[in-house]
Length: 247
Image (cartoon, rainbow, N blue to C red; front, side, top):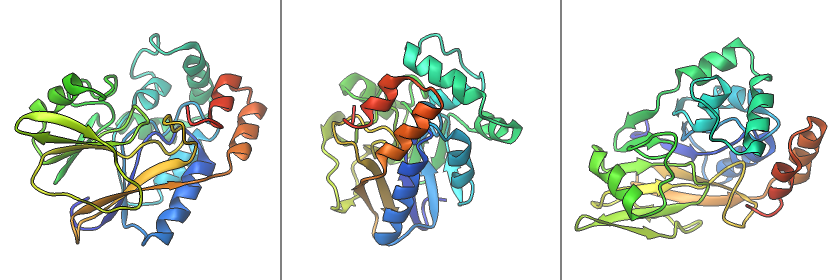
């Protein structure tokens, strides 16, 4: 599906509807998109899990499961979550109807969409492992059967290329087409709903198959509106405050 069109690449929306809508609007400014590739954690932390699921499903969509998606429907044990994440997860589970639960439960851990493989965490451990260092990159490259891998989970963007069998992490620049060449790559577009690179703006990417490029963008959204919703729902203050700081 991702091979014949412009695909909007999203990760870690985390039930932040204001951020998601800002990304949709911004993506139209940069040329629009034909389909969405979602790298997991559509829900969790934020105040609009149902609305975010419904908005995604309005488009042609390929999505994989994240750890918060799986925890919200009881597919995994959330005992390893910190107290803030657990509180948000229990609240989230109560906001979902049967259709939302069916959608999240049906998401695969890994999706192959040539020339990409989509996964939330890593191919070695699809919804748990953070891919941020040589060891985790090597583990995924050893299992990767397509040329490129799209990951999320860490909320930090990067491009990791493989040169002579060794992975190297590089910055994923903004508003600068990155040419997808012969090197195998692992690409993280950053987080839509809860960035953790000290920049509170949403981060996302667009893949253009006609020129074989992927390009990353940042867009500001109405953080205060999201925070007010979270306060109204009684979500943890730590989760509310961190949105201001991109942490």
